[in-house]
Length: 147
Image (tube, rainbow, N blue to C red; front, side, top):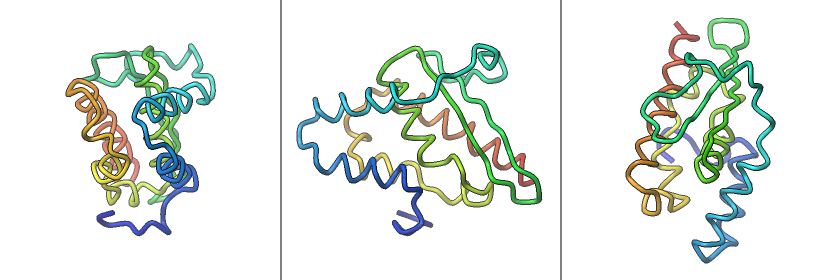
């Protein structure tokens, strides 16, 4: 991955890569993505606010950001969606980005991750655009925290 070696991956995203390699059929991979979404912690109703809603997604997607202290804080994200497959995509992005320092988030190539998983070829254009909107939001929040 551009800007990151596999050894720098969060354990959660590495597990997703490993599991994807075991699943040969795309129907099984889609089911796995949906299961990832089901395993997300409950998203609090109080966080379903307009400022947490990700713009640019066809489905409703919410993302709440918390940050640690200091000039390069650790960023934590929780998220949810009203669509099963999108909720799973949210889970993948949280596994990729949550728990990283703001400066690291800027270097993560989310497109390369999607390509490695094969999702770049198997998402509808609307879902791919929504995913890009979520990544842009995560990067914007990290850039604000690092400023």
